[in-house]
Image (cartoon, rainbow, N blue to C red; front, side, top):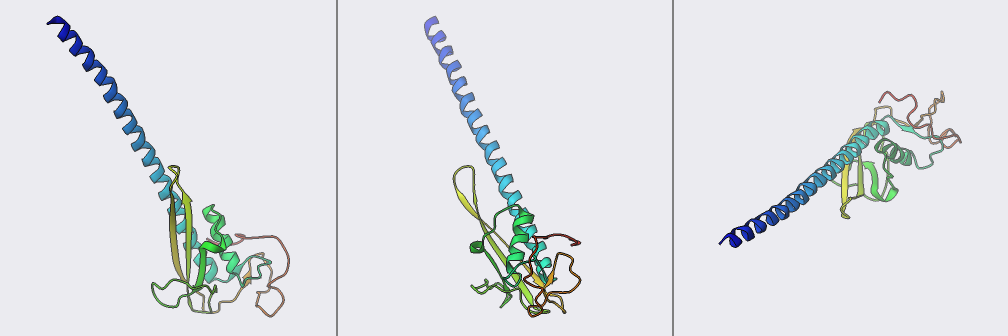
Length: 180
């Protein structure tokens, strides 16, 4: 009988180690998933904030010096810079808002004066666990009533597509002098 008791105690102590190991693995996984979720949410929030702020930038007509895309690339660059993500032309759209909840088509445009514009970004995010999720952000902005392209590098004259100032050289002065 004493042998059975000793054997039983040995089995119980072994199961405690197994239970502790399983519990530790589960706790580690929960902490890891929590950190991964926080990372995902932080990047999503940062992207949405950048898209929202870039909408105001676009609505005011600002563009980078040397931008030959009618200011479309300037808005995309602004989002990339503010979000700290590489936003490519493949996952970026800007258009005059055709209708509520209608996605932008293939034609990219910053719209006309007083017209609502829509910005859409889809960013593929590689998670640490090996899965890829697509973060989506969009924003609406209304172009100013006297909207026209204006360089952001501090030139005194506004840029209009016909006056030769739109495509002059210079560095990327993105962000200088903006109140937002």
